[in-house]
Image 1 (cartoon, rainbow, N blue to C red):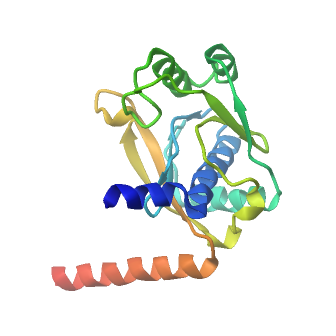
Image 2 (image 1 turned 180 degrees about the vertical axis):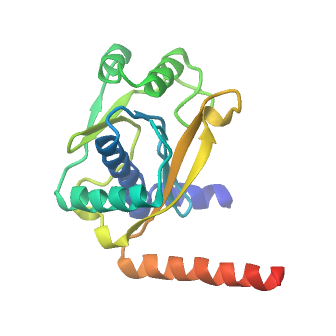
Length: 205
């Protein structure tokens, strides 16, 4: 039952909105930190995240600036364009991005995919380009940023995350965000989180 629910979610517009918004966030972050390195950025149950190797820790002010830039990108009416690439083409595209190069090698050798799962069959490598940002990604995405409502997007928190979830690897900066189809959905979600916090405080009291 749970697997069917996950499948339905991955086929939904909401999933594509969140996955696409993760790419938009990555573009905004790399514009702010051009020397930064990108790792992975999936959609998750209530939103999305993206992991970065950045030159300094992020501040709440950084999050506000990144979120504002994301809204500008969304309003820019950019298409998401998929392209299949060979491993050599992928390596050339991401030559300055060590985490992407590791993913490419893993996919090519039948090792691990971008989510750290064993590759059971040799996948087709593909990139998605939107505005000035290109990412190694299977998708799916929205067709165009106009399918994302900028008022239904919010960055939530910053955390540390080891690359590939392995404490022997480098600690990366993970930015969590959430995106919904409508602003009212976002409001309801934030209200639900607030109510959950209050209940936790009452328990602690």
